[in-house]
Length: 252
Ligand code: UDP
Image (cartoon, rainbow, N blue to C red; front, side):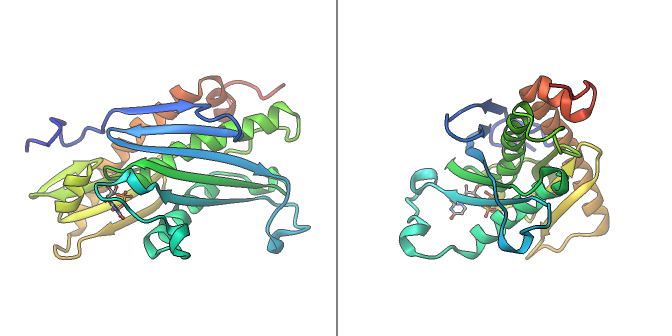
C-alpha cells in the first residue's frame, strides 16, 4: 500500500526529541512524530496527595491538553468550558499509568512528579507521542534530583514508550497519521518497556472486529515501533540513559 507520506507499512514517522525546550520545568521536552508536536514538561513538587501522606512513597500524575489551533478547526479550550471531556481524562490517566509503571515510587520519596503534555499540533498519535516524550522529560527531572543528591539513584526501572498501530484497507500499519487514523478499521495504542513488556494495549475494531491472529501481528508491529522509539529516547538522553540502564555506575 502507498501510504500518504510514502512510508513503508512498518515505518514510524520522523522522530525528533528536543530536551530543555522551556526553561522553568525540571524536565522539558518537545517531541515531534512527523507533524504531531507535543510539549511535555515534568515538574517536581515536594509533597504527595493526601492518600500518600506519611507513606514514604511518591506519585506521578499527568495532564494533557490540545491547544486551540493544534487541529484543523479551532478547538475551544477546556478550561473555558469549565470541564474536562472524557477523551482528555482517558488520555491523561493513560499517560500517568504508563509512567508510574516504570518508576520505583518508594525510591522517589514523598514527592509528586507533575507531567503536563500540551499538544501544539495534532496529526494522530498525540497520546502515544505524549508518553514517549514525557518519559524523557521525567528522566531529566529525576536526574536533577539525583544531581542535587536528593535521591541516591535515578528510580527508573525501565524505559517506556508508546506507538499506534492499525489496520487500513486490510493492511497492518505502524504509527498512524490523522488521515490514516480516521479511516482505519482497527486502531490500537501500544505502550511498552525496553524489556519488551506490554504496559497497556488499547485496541478498537468497532465496525470491523479483529481476530487473535491480527492482534498478534499488530502487537509485533507495535513492538518494532516501540524499539525504535526507545532507541530515540536513549539517544536523546545520552549519558543519563547510561545511568538509568546501569551501564554506568550512579555516583555523583
Ligand atoms: N483530533 C482532533 N480533534 C480532537 C480530537 C482528535 O483534531 O478533538 C485529531 C488529532 O489529529 C488526533 C487524531 O484526531 O491526533 C486522533 O485522535 P485520537 O482521539 O485517536 O487520539 P490520538 O491518536 O491523538 O492519541
